[in-house]
Length: 333
Image 1 (cartoon, helix red, strand yellow):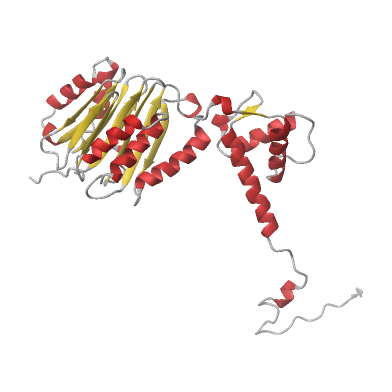
Image 2 (cartoon, one colour):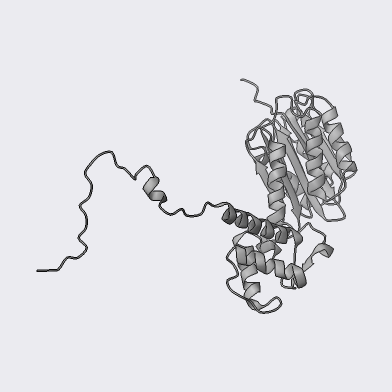
């Protein structure tokens, strides 16, 4: 029987103790890698299963992590019970930030891993060991929160050569308690690029949009109080875009609040709506940019020209006969 295919991939699993976040970032020359490799649960841990991936490592590993089993023991239990373990690769971080990784002896070269404090990097069919080594250094030295550090590590791995066969898909999964949409899940960040010539760059681009509309990663101290000039600018922008019609009362009156709320809901900013008289600067900048674009459109649209239709291609038909002139006055018999 032919040996099953083994797919080249590089990934990082990590834990942010300060913010209480667990995450996985991955890239591969493999379609929709986000549907196979990353697994996680807030407060429990995260896993990456790859090479000749055993997808049962995901749910089975999380079940062990829920019981408080350490990352090292999760790796040991999963691989020791797997007859195909020599073709597997696995990275795990547990609920306390313990990290472990495994690379089977039959994973295609180059294959290996680096484990650090609160993270594990692993990859197979890589250009060189520098891929996972660069990921580890970058993750440890990059400031910011977990999504930023995971994306930076992924970029670093690609700069060092990445998957020897090239690029196709990438994914970013970050878990935080009630961090998902409307606090209804723990999937704070869940983005997948299933097929793209430069999936990491596309992942970054989509994350910026995701961050703008769904996340609140900005410093709370940066929130803008809606009064004075910021409020006047808000009203002008809402007016330009047709959300605020006619004059409004002084201050942040009910009419303006309703108009701003409608803008937020129609543009997918409901996660960033506030009721304390403040707004996130990123939302206000997005609103102003939309208003500037609309004003530019109005100013650059050509005005109506008198008689333009008489000069168009239909002004002198080439066939048929002219219509009869309509009588100026027609008196019924």
